[in-house]
Amino acid sequence: MDIDVSAIFQIAGIGIVIAMIHTVLKQMGKEDMAHWVTLIGFVVVLFMVVRMLNELFQEIKTIFLFQ
Image (cartoon, rainbow, N blue to C red):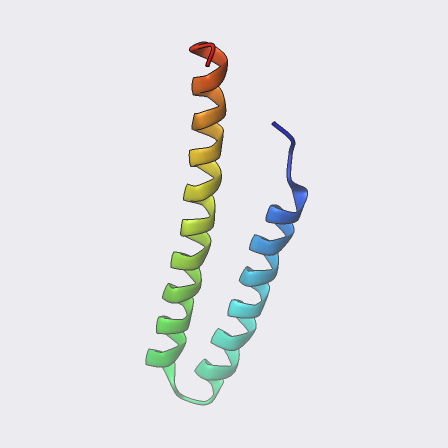
């Protein structure tokens, strides 16, 4: 299992972009949209993390079950 550093940079990039969009929308007075954008960004990152955890558990399973 190799460590994929690009995934960390992708998550950080998504966080920075979402924070900028949230700030712009909040300053425009569209706080509801800003909260929705933040929620959607959180869900996208959550799916990325779940996919990486799935790969980790599959690797652990193959190591300990000798498959």
